[in-house]
Length: 237
Ligand SMILES: N[C@@H](CCC(=O)N[C@@H](CS)C(=O)NCC(=O)O)C(=O)O
Image 1 (spheres, rainbow, N blue to C red):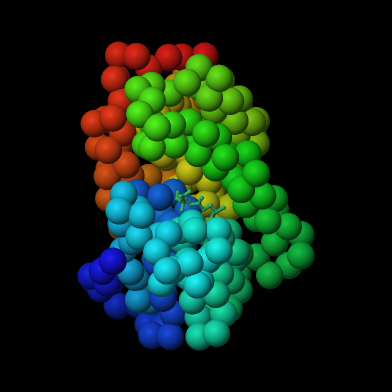
Image 2 (image 1 turned 90 degrees about the horizontal axis):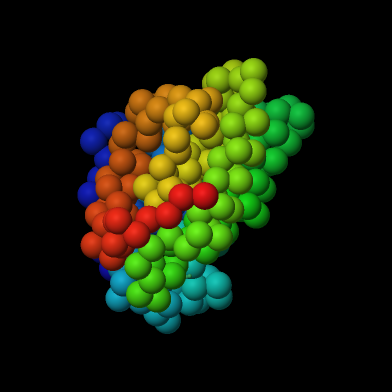
């Protein structure tokens, strides 16, 4: 495990906060993007998942689930990316830009986060883990179908709107962008079938926090997958 390099942009430093993360992981990248979007700087510790460091005794104390990310703010320990990003915005950002303060606006963001947590991320995991950890050489057809179904959901959710959560990008967009950009590596979002979704992903990819906090880890994931995957065995739904 190692402390990551400090951010180039001057930001609001929270020395009492630590994030244990792996850049390859979508939920970790959601937290990293939220940190950059909120202009917050905390101690970031890289954890090598290939070496099983996330299951070691030091981190098991913080997270019985043995997953990343893990976040610590003094005595508070959180181990779910959605809870972490909401906490950071509610605790350290006054503006309500990324997490509205009014109950209705907030519920829309919660809804998007629940969609990610219960549908999108589990579909990523079901498709990626057999390749990453079980020597599977392709994205299994039933997982391709499940992912395409989610693309259809998101395409519908974007009818009449530019962003998923409101009139500008919010934590809901950030969370879904972390997972969706990763799914896009495994099952490309077809712009003919999903024009709104592919335009939304393009718009998200131009946001500064996506460039600073998502791009590198996404590239690492993509390279790792390329090493493991027999590209010509990819299937479509
Ligand atoms: N719902 C959790 C999911 C966390 C999660 O499953 N993280 C993966 C990395 S992408 C992990 O740590 N997996 C380790 C393992 O399953 O051994 C969140 O959003 O933080």
